[in-house]
Image (cartoon, rainbow, N blue to C red; front, side, top):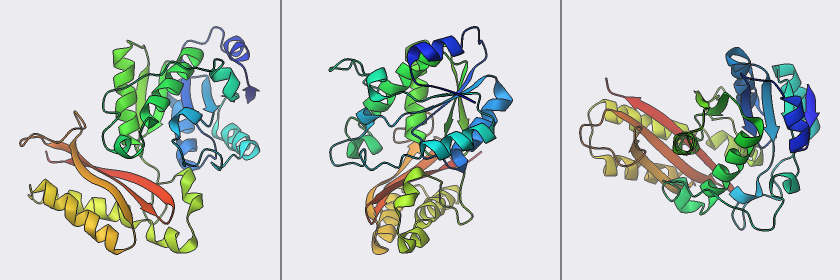
Length: 276
């Protein structure tokens, strides 16, 4: 696997590539990231990954400075997973000017955006920059960050980018916890409690499939159960998969999304609901 750090090196390394698959990451890689790389290898080659901890998507008081950085280990994992090229730029390479143009996406103030102002503008800005540099044919993202996936798909449509956004299923631990780089922040006690978020979302999904339509009540009940077990709930919401907005009465393709803090760690998850 080749490692490059500058846009010029990246362009030279990709000269002539026409079916590139791209996996953008912030590093501290786990099995979920590696599953994206392995899927990318099945879709197109060369496979390019990036590691860049993006300051624009972290708000004041968030964990930008302490976000886990494990570059040497990440390189080993990527190479074993079949990555051909790693782009690992410094901040000055992606943000060479003091002021940065930012993409302001629709739905940026919904769900996670309500609790992380500016987050999705930062995500879209860095991903658009990476897309412009890598020029991939395919870009792979996990469904755990479902709102991010939805917004990035919209960005690709809005900017008429010739990129296929490939959504990959969330990779989970044996107890159901969605794999995340931030899981490493959890204490042993919190780690044992952490799968409850996914369990509550599944309980809500089953209630909808069984015929309940009092969505506000279902959201409130799930939030209250989490709070009784020590969670600080940002939201539990049922949304349309088509719009990521509150569903119409006859909408069948739904998703329940949740975000909550356990100790000082913010976890997110979701469950898709199909009703035929």
